[in-house]
Image 1 (cartoon, helix red, strand yellow):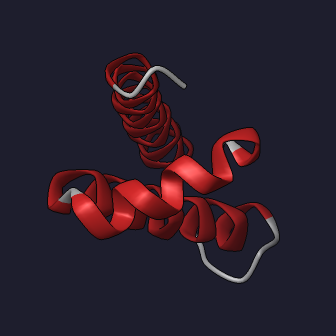
Image 2 (tube, helix red, strand yellow; image 1 turned 30 degrees about the vertical axis):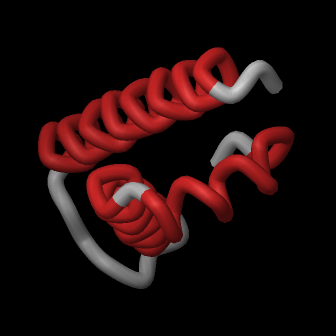
Length: 75
């Protein structure tokens, strides 16, 4: 997720518990979605779409935190 901000993400995961939680939950959802799409787990289509939307929401929230961090730190 957002690989171009790897250094900032590393800092935020250490300094911001909320960001760390968002990042961890995003990664959990990403793996669950991958498992369903590759047939290792079953989930109905509506539930899968709900997970994808939740994952996107978390990514958007993480991105907003990253942009604020960049602005606040003149990066």
